[in-house]
Amino acid sequence: MGLCVPYIHSDRNCFFTAWLRQNGAEMTWNYRIMKRKCPETKEIYYALNEVFYKGKGKPWMYSERDDIVGGSPEEIIETLEMMLTDAKKDAPVLTEKDFKKKK
Image (tube, rainbow, N blue to C red; front, side, top):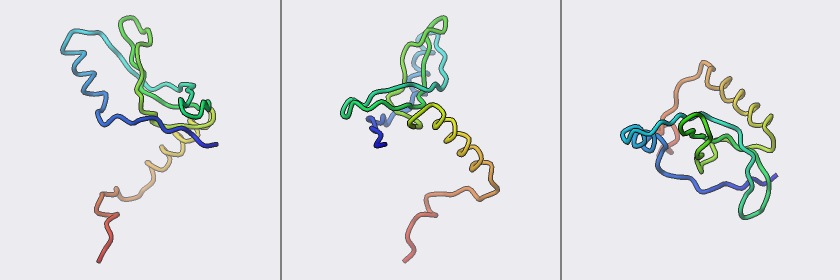
């Protein structure tokens, strides 16, 4: 399955959240699995996105950036479980220097 990779924002939503709070808007957010359609290929896929709620918990908007994509909601959950298992392993934290070629 070839998944469509949407445009990725360079800004993070924390700036938007801060702006809303400074301007008195009530807002909460969480991660939700969404069923999406690639505009180019029309292929259906699932993605984990940040979803923002305004007022009394009504979905208001979501991030354009898909944090995790998969062919089903179960595949996204499996990926998250694998990520958590890997993050808990007793391995050193990597830095960008670990990937630089040595001369």
